[in-house]
Image 1 (tube, helix red, strand yellow):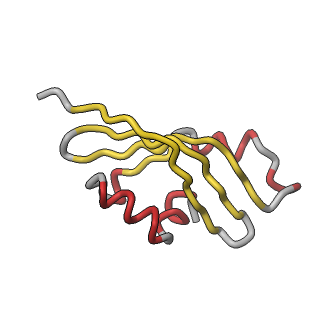
Image 2 (cartoon, helix red, strand yellow; image 1 turned 180 degrees about the horizontal axis):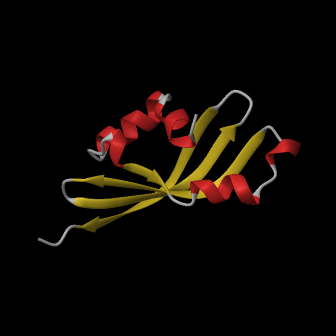
Length: 91
């Protein structure tokens, strides 16, 4: 299970994406693969890391910045948003 799938299991993250009209297939966690390569998880069962989640909707791109809390044993994830930026599409 990926971090994205774990986040989508939580109601608060789904609600956040609905608020910004972002569909699940248009969500990308930037540098997700690096998180697992850089930090040796075999020592820990939890990850707390500042991340950027990119979401796309009809108006453009929205970058969500915040802290990811990820329990590796239970595959539970919570995203604590600290801010966002909108990048409008140029037609």
